[in-house]
Length: 255
Image 1 (tube, rainbow, N blue to C red):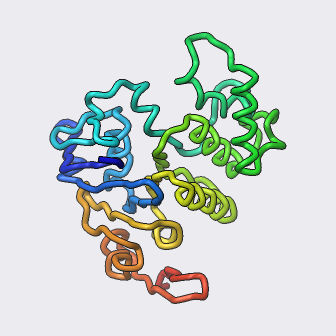
Image 2: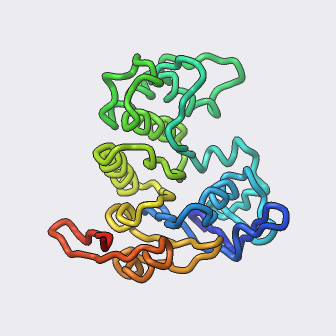
């Protein structure tokens, strides 16, 4: 059974229930957005899928195998994680950061081979970042950093990519550029799960979406079918209109 399958998972921090009976599946060749306000359980859901937290009930499988039976290395072969903008303590170059994605294929304390360095440079080139290979990662722009983290995920050679609010700190242009790249990756075969606060992102870049509120799924399906003014108001307490443009639907807050 291919894909990531989340089946009826629940999770609590002590007495506080954060996720309740959450179920969905992620396939290859698709972008699935997880939409919801702060405190809706998005980050906790991602931590459960990554094996950092263990649900109190339910199951999560990746390509038919339960993550509870998988080692961290085996899980890294399947799932790559892209966080919000990462600020390393040390002055790593862009190439160093991408090579970190290959660590699961290297022995402890081993140095990357010339072949691995060439592979990392090719991945950077595929994202238009080849000229920055020797730049200090901490000193490039936020949008460039996110593209480098995507390159690191690609170097990991996993089938699925999880992005936890990875564009939240980017300006408008960089959000569009990064999400455009994400969309292209899904078309090339990756299954991508991305959490976002922005309903327009789900509308414009996703094949499917789920809406989380208070730890439960309140809507699921294609954005054009389920993302409407009533759902936006239910999630965020904001009235909005959906306007048809030449590029698709635009979500406009009612002021």
